[in-house]
Amino acid sequence: MNIDDKLTLQNCEEALVLVQKQLQSGKDLHLAFNQLGAIYGILKQYAKAEEYFKQAISLKPNFAAPYLNLGIIYNTQTEYVKSAEYFEKALQMDDNNSNVHYNYAIALQENGEINKAIEYYKTAIKFDPNRADAHFNKGLLDLLTGNFTEGWKEYEDWGYLSGDRIKREIKGKLWKGESYIGKTLYVFSDQGFGDAINYFRYLPYIKKLGGKLIFECPANLYNLFENNNSCFDELTTPEKGDKFIPDFQIPLTSIPALFHLNNMEIKTDFPYLKVKETKENYWKNVIHNNNNLKIGFLWKGNPYPPINKKRHAKLEDFYPLFEAPDTDWYSFLFEDDTELKNCVYKNVFDFTKEIKDFEDTAAILNNLDMVVTIDSGLAHLAGALNKNVLLLVPFVPDWRWGLKTDKTVWYPSIKIFRQNSSKTWFNVINEINRYLRDIISK
Image (cartoon, rainbow, N blue to C red; front, side, top):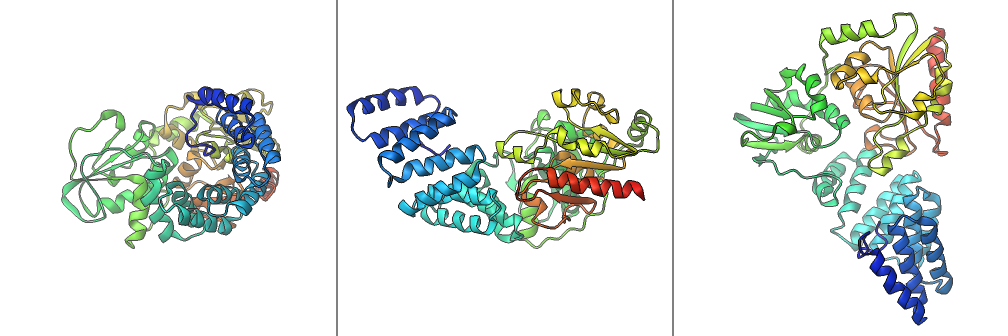
């Protein structure tokens, strides 16, 4: 949290002792209560934090800090409407504070006021030009709104400085799109599975520009990507370690920015991932042989970072879909899950304990008719395989899915269903349910 940059979990106990002494002195009690709120905010005891911030306000109503801190507390709990009210009050007292503008921008963003959020990120940057998190967040919103030139520049310039991208020390000169004929280029996957699948499409174009292309991918993707070896000369994983010093290197997630900022265009043919026929045939014999519509589904995924939780649904949200006639549903949740164990629908199946990696997942998908999923690696994989995907996205989605339209430039087979301002899945599930039943009735 940004409540107090000097506070950490380790020094909270010491800070608490000092605050208690200040309270006993009876001096500057508004400062003491604000500090108490900050301490309990760091400790994630939000009810106590809220109580102390409000006490600070009652003692000194024109003191900006507790208003800012209350807003941050509410942001942390995804109560963005409430947090915006407190940031607005803080701005009335301190409108040249980068922290207030930055945190207010987060609330505006999550309330769907995207253009206004961009302006407040800009103001935060004006008061603190080196504020990396404001630059990076603004860049993501630029990408979301289609301002790709500014968005990719912010993403590249500030992603590592903000901590949203983790820098790896890879030997070799950073590749900037030049020919590397007679040399070696090392491209390494540096984000999640979805990013690796999404940006894999660039490799054939990169390979045409030079000599030896070595691609490093997560181990779970190795067998799948190995089936597509015309896109690289050598495939490796982080576990194998560096065996050599390449002439050039570049993280995979920097490639879209490189292509866009240098006007390098690609045309992707779908599907751009292949699966071994033996794998597909194996899963064809496992999946039920009937005339039902066979649908893969996923309702939740990686909880980190915490903002990802807005992408997740509850399994019971999907229950109306399971009731569609002549459908079989195949879960792709790779964890032991109470929701799934308690599901009573006889047309819901779970083969995930038999799935070894993404190659198995892709082979199953190629034996299904459709996928219904939240924003996840599964969505990217199904899109890369050109499977029909009904994608549930939150009110404020990941930048890749843009705003308003039900299409995406990334995958022609994906149809997007968006949350409305209620930020629940009710309207989305209703729309998907109608869509499915129309298909079934034809």
